[in-house]
Length: 173
Image (cartoon, helix red, strand yellow):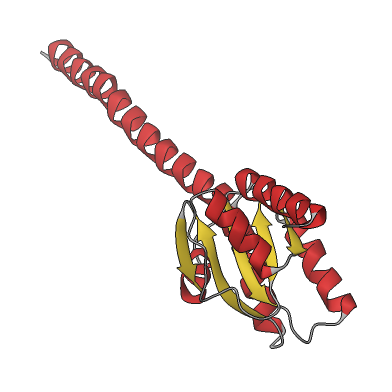
């Protein structure tokens, strides 16, 4: 019979998974408390949060949500980064931290109901952030609007120039 603490933990993990856009799994073995706190702070600034849960409880929560159970990833010590906001921002933090600290290893994760490998998480981290994409879209729209405005303003200008030329020819004759 499952104990009450484990049932409560599975419910908490389930709520975290429902609220998150993605979950990244990392091996934090060898990190000091200070290093782990630096990672937690960076993840929090990126709009996510990091928790350490028992792998079996995470598997139960994933199974309850009809998500991939990540059996091959959930072995050994695991920390879970829940991307509450932009999943790319949280993935960037994880990738940068893993690059600077060889003790932490990216194992994989879950996003939109799909299991992801460590390479997938790194590929997501290389995507532009949501704000950068908004900026690129705004720039593209602005460029098209500017081009349209220039083209449309050229028509009356051309008509005015042609009318002025005809007027000058009539005055000269």
